[in-house]
Amino acid sequence: MKKLIPNTFNLPVYANDVITVNSIQQLLDCYEQATSKNLPILVLGEGSNTLFTEDFGGIIIINRIKAITVTENEHYWLIKVGAGEIWHQLVRYLIDNNMPGLENLALIPGCVGSAPIQNIGAYGVEFEKFSDYIELLELATGKLIRVTDGKYSYRESIFKSQYLEGFVIVHVGLKIAKQWQPILDYGELKNFDPSTVTARAIFDKVSEVRRAKLPDPKVLGNAGSFFKNPVIDQIQYDILIKCYPSMPSYPQANGCIKVAAGWLIEQCGLKGKKVGGAAVHDKQALVLVNNGNAIAQDVIDLAHLVINTVQQKFNISLSPEIRFIGKHGEIKPNVLLS
Image (cartoon, rainbow, N blue to C red):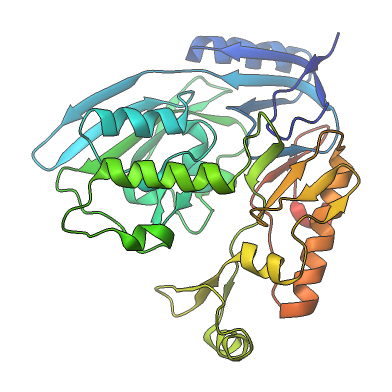
């Protein structure tokens, strides 16, 4: 009997089996079970950044390898975290124990093991800033491999390509500076006084804003931000800002400009737009939601509509942030959305 796959889009998708593992040995046992039956496997945390386009024809492994270990040197807190820990709970744990730094990344959904894959980021901070090492399990051999250079960029890492097949992230090493510096460059955080603000205040404000703008997946199925914020060159930016002087924009180190995908979508009049059971969220246009009866194709068709509309209005190409999973594994977005 097939089992329902946990996914925050709350889509009715199934796999041959869904197995929760709490240790490396259990993970290896599941891999051996799948390979003996010639079945594909997919390792998930909370299924928070995925859209299953159909039932998965193999075994889903839910990674619940946990534990938080803290050591320190003169300048840094060194934290080893099991990939199955919930990211937001880790952020809160560190704030509660006077190890600030991750507060801008509060309430990002998913598990710790997903953070390096996506190089998660919010409010001017990305995971890369705190990454010390990523510990990978090579499934075929059982060897543990420590990677210190994730080749991070905006919502990208080496773990999306070279280490996507045949490896599983089992631990994440973080390095957090003891000399704390608040990052207040984005959104409502600009209202804080850098000389008096606390990490707890930032944590609370980020959590408050995210809860107000982003739907709870338990209430309204979604995968968080569906699209990446696009990066355009200075020439295109200069043209657009003359027409849209209120367009949110963020200069990048390479001279390009990042613009807000949610703002672009909203300017196209797509807030609340529905296709079947899927919709653009009425409070945050960057999020596509399941109104309760969506199928995967509804979400795909809506994403396609959003991409085409933004392209026509602004000559900017939106790229999905989420992963698309088909019967045998991951599907490249251009296969579905071109």
